[in-house]
Length: 282
Image 1: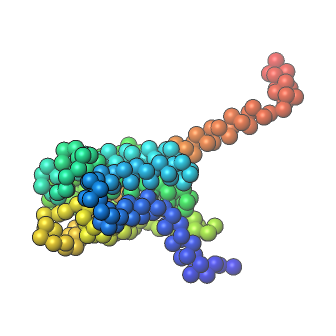
Image 2 (image 1 turned 90 degrees about the vertical axis):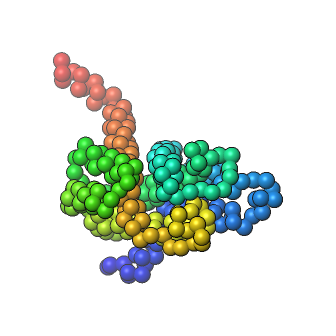
Image 3 (image 1 turned 180 degrees about the vertical axis):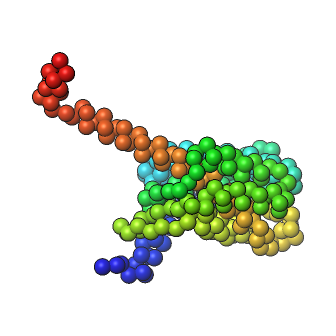
């Protein structure tokens, strides 16, 4: 008997909330940084955010909410995000106007955790919803497309360049689909739609983050304004590197687990079977 739609949606919502734990923690830290008297304590806000993000990561790994490999994914995206932030800040794309001890190249080190939140979400959602992907191009093609997608952010991307990258991704992933499990029932959606939806949620989160002073776009210097809708497009593209890295990690983990199981099966074979096999070979 099919499960009621409301129950499926409820279980799906719970799994998504759990997958967003790290992202919610970052938003909570931003709220705290605006309410606590950090200036009176002599603690720069950006440094408070960095220490808070590191503490959250330590807690999640300690209680085994995250695996060490998932923490490694977060670190990778932190580095990718930081290099992109440093480049964009140097070009005047946006700014971090407050002083901090943990600023490098005018970018506070906590900033990379914004990108790491996307990687954390994908990794958590993959495990919790038992994601499976089909119809994707060969790994070398994916790697080339993801590299092109990431590197194009370092250019002054015109609409034509971004449209070209987007069309290449659409052609490569047009047949790709992702299967996910909610409360024991499998569901399926086009992978490209997943990219668009994740990009939309990150865009909404970016509006909240800028409203809380995480960073400032030039048009927000005189007062907060909604983030330009084109950022939805950009975040949709930025989702693809996160997906590829997590996909490669999970594929490797599955193959490693299968190899361990096969080794255990071989080790647990009865002595009589092994001995008989040896006599038969002779």
